[in-house]
Length: 229
Image: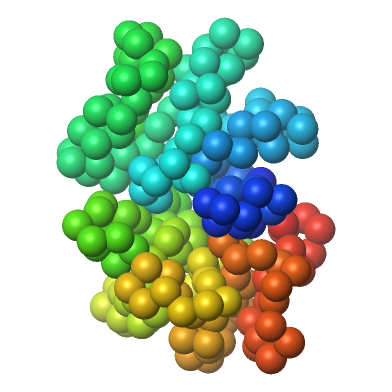
């Protein structure tokens, strides 16, 4: 599975951009998150046309801030509707309420797509594990070569291990958000992710690469091979 990160930082890491990744998955281009820096990064990298679908892990601004612009770009410049993937009815309602404030006549410009219509994609509910009472999601992406976990923001380091066990699915690669400092219940401290190294390769994001501790046993997504970062 080919993928590329559009940014690797958090809300305040301006020089690294908001964390987001574009996956080429089973014939479609899935953008995971679209924070306020992401549209500009897509334009600069010449990747706007490659995006056909978008999935938001949650509605914090650094994960959805430029989605309205991307929707309009697809409609007015590419002549097509962007597809927004929803995990369930509450997710659909939440995103519709969010976007109708910035994109008038929403159904004219955007198509909501059920996750069952996106082959190889499973949404993992992580509600309340990043911010109290906030709906959040992780993603499990599968094709003929890879099974990749994309965590989204969360502060519960053992959650996905329990999910893998329950589902009987083992990833070939984990892309997990992390923090260098301690933010209990909000973000995962990088050392709390070490047990995942027993499963497969683990790369971290949402943390400034230039502040990476020398003792870190994990690799940053900026250290992925060129075709995968």
